[in-house]
Image (cartoon, rainbow, N blue to C red; front, side):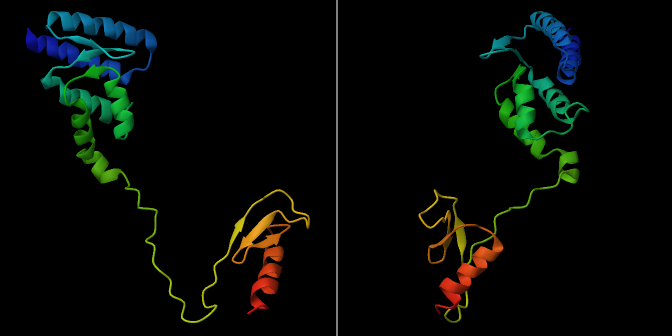
Length: 179
């Protein structure tokens, strides 16, 4: 009898994970309640949903359906957790989901890992004066008396525009000609 109940539970939970229809979802939930009552399994409430307390022997199947089914499409940890934890409860289920996804064969073979986008900062040592010159722009700010709204940051040079010609003129007159 317990195996029969577990099979019914797995079939119903699979349908629940795969289908997004609200009507079917409430139909399946009522059937899950019936299976729970027949197999002495509990239902638990979180803040918004009624959660089915899944037996240990059903965890693997729930994870497989929640992560590997066509509807789930090998989602990442956050999406899979949201989907499974909104319907099911089991102590240690979060850790089981993380472990399942991290060890998913298909994900290991197919998914591209995102490279670390940050470069390593290295100190630049100039070999001589003016060998390395850094500049930056700040603004727009409120217009000054002279009509400037930007500041060229190397020597805090005020600029009316932030186009290439204005910046080049400022660098030539306030930096290159000065040194």
